[in-house]
Image 1 (cartoon, rainbow, N blue to C red):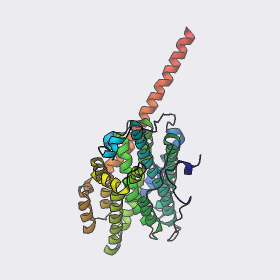
Image 2 (tube, helix red, strand yellow; image 1 turned 180 degrees about the horizontal axis):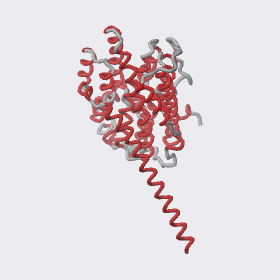
Image 3 (tube, rainbow, N blue to C red; image 1 turned 135 degrees about the vertical axis):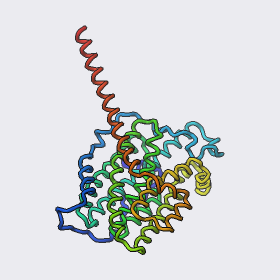
Length: 367
């Protein structure tokens, strides 16, 4: 079945064309590089994995409760619309929300793949080109996995959110080589990581937990790469150049905070756009979720050297300024450890099953 048959509404043209700007940069220095970045490149090579094998795709998923989402987390909960909904309606609402979330993850991962390829093309340093090549493969794997989950387990997709598409387009159209880092590695990936982490840590469903834990293990390296490269480069920029980057960050953060609310889902259930936006603003869960969305972005922005007065004021206005002191290294270490622990638990369980099968076979043979 074509993906287009599974979309909740027509996504438009099958191909979105973004005009490319900027220069492709070749480097003739092959024997020099930053030790930290080359070590990350080595780690990127060592940590490659196959989504078809590492993830247990035989695990069953109820498409009407794929994440175990409680009623209180749904935007319509407690409204007059909720009172009229049957259990079947509520189950379908859960399916739509999961589809919307994972569809945005899927579209974002394709964007990350293209941005990583753009970095390979445009970044001037060979060590950064090397690492970006491994990240391009990572993002391709993530898009493959999210696409498979949506096709095989949910059976429904949503088009890319207009505002996510706008931020992605702005990132790709900019001719400055550092902008794919800033727009994708810091903003879009930072937002996605927080969303991944919230679902990973709250879902009781094993398949989405596996998917998110393993993807986040890769993303921990990607954020480290963006921090290293941009921190080094931004130390060389003028105040005016830094201010341009800060303006981009401010606009992107407000856009993500105010627009990525899943209003499209409620419109599919007969709720007007205006009313859907009002319900979103009144949702306590969404307010908490918004704040968590910036838990990875704010400390990263501060770490790379974008911390001017205007940017700080914007984060105060958003209520996320204090997140600048969060320990980003600790968060990334935890992301890696959670994936490794999940592997250990799965392999131990599989080994125990094999031992039980052998023991049973021996017992039957003896009898």
